[in-house]
Length: 64
Image (tube, rainbow, N blue to C red; front, side, top):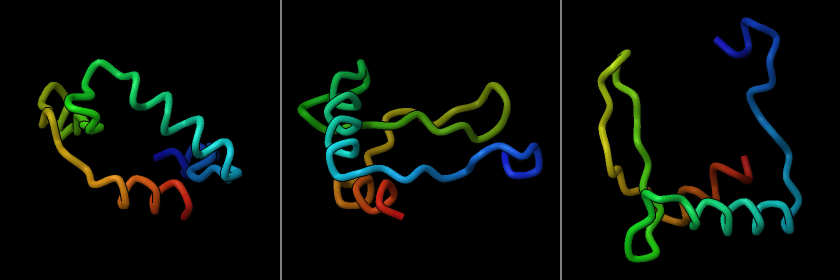
């Protein structure tokens, strides 16, 4: 949908920017025990809460 609208779908971050982004993500209210959790939309009005995503997966997603 973003691509069809001509909006960016990827962002290139430096190592320092990635580090700052991860630090900011750790301040989110959904963080528990130092673990970043996500809320994923299934459909409009229906979400899956507290989805754990391994740190390595988050790092890889930010590098791709």
